[in-house]
View 1 (cartoon, rainbow, N blue to C red):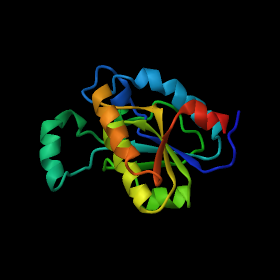
View 2: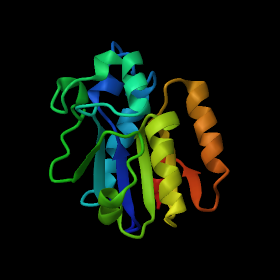
View 3: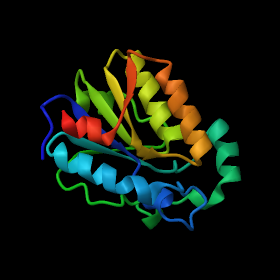
Length: 180
């Protein structure tokens, strides 16, 4: 199944550090949303961008204190913890040391939109990517049931906050996207 040629899918940080239940940053509903993400990736074949969060080599500014709280994460970008769960194949991968993935590299890959966002964590990297993309004037659609947060409450609060940005940013579901 493919969806109408309407925008790009951005799969945010579907990495082992968020998927593995033994990791401090594990998203509790990762296993539940991952099949939905896979369905969307299959439907958007050729129009998918993956992102990846990695720690900086030398944290600076407020990141110094952040990594003092999360020292396990100070690993090189090629550490197994930062691997994508799924092989991206020929899809581009944007790697950043920031929560938000919106910037010149991602903007160049997604064009003028619309852009559909899915992934983890709803309350961190998805939110931090969605808002600046909407500010840039893109039609941003967050596939709510294909996102996982640090907790259900945190994910719900992030989705509620993003809903306030309509019509620049709207919430949708996997089934609605795949129905076209």
